Length: 436
Ligand SMILES: Cc1cc2nc3c(=O)[nH]c(=O)nc-3n(C[C@H](O)[C@H](O)[C@H](O)COP(=O)(O)O)c2cc1C
Image (cartoon, rainbow, N blue to C red):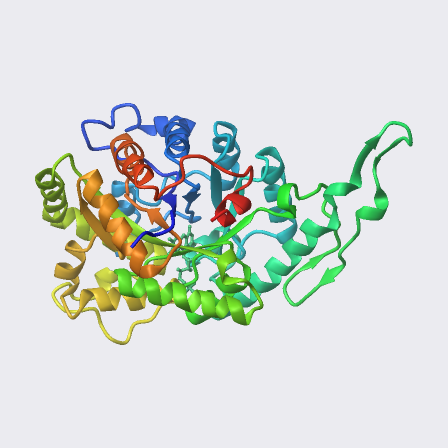
């Protein structure tokens, strides 16, 4: 069966790229903090027809696991990490068509500041910035912003909903058409098209108007990755792009169908929302090389265990060292962090002990192993079942090699099969996302 082309995004962050392989010479030290690695990466992604680079973020050095930052900093998973909103300007500057989606938290920004920064990026990029709306999940981050701990999970979404409302009002408060630059009348901007919003809600107060227009489309693209029922509703109501980590085709289909149904209840056209399940491709020149790479990864048990422990600590503030590693994960623990991730984790562990389960777990997502040709076929089959819309490529840490495997290996195969764009039909991220 012929299927429609689909989209690709890359799930990145601005932490250290792979620093242990023989190919990591240039970027293995703090050199990457000058962004050269990531500038080269977005140029490659654009050449390959990607719709966007999504830059995840967190706002702390996690010292939850064993009560110290030792293992976190040993693996450099979450820190050091650059601010994606600031860095997006530089990445947009070296690209012409592709989008850059920067993560920013509704728990720590003020709506006015966020609306202004993203309006600035939307203008300077000609409409290619996206905002990944997150509510954050770490008390450690809250403590960096003067709070003792995060608001509770569903309350964070209440705050996020009002935040979104204020931001949208601010983006609408200074019309793009207000700029006349009319030398004859002597008016640069028309004050009738620039109006205060006078927002006074439960969590925010903002007078407005914003002091610049929002730029192309009147707003940036909105991205979200809610997994809980509350998060899914928020995403379905607001997002152009939705990211998810279901393992396997069935769960990806269930998630997409659910989001589309929720979107319809909010009066939205489900086709205006593009869902991107995360996949983790392991690519080799031959099947044997790809399989060997995969096995090599699973053989690094202690390394994998430590990395997963810091991941749990950072995203859920769960210190797994408090539990017996030779027992399954206890039934009665909960998190105020990413709730749906904990549910997924339990399913994936399937009764295994903490040590065994986590030392053999790469990431909660769909793995694909093979040559570029075989990966393209697996993507095609996946998409045929799920029905759309795109994939978010994951591969942490990122290396020049892993980027090239996708951009110079898999992407050209997809393009030859008519499954991936070879050019951008529009100027802005929102329009390109909706173009098919
Ligand atoms: C692909 C993907 C990327 C995400 N990126 C971030 C991020 O950069 N920062 C963050 O705080 N949360 C991030 N999250 C977490 C989500 O925003 C969300 O909190 C999580 O999926 C759990 O859903 P829930 O909030 O509905 O419980 C990400 C989730 C996914 C699936």
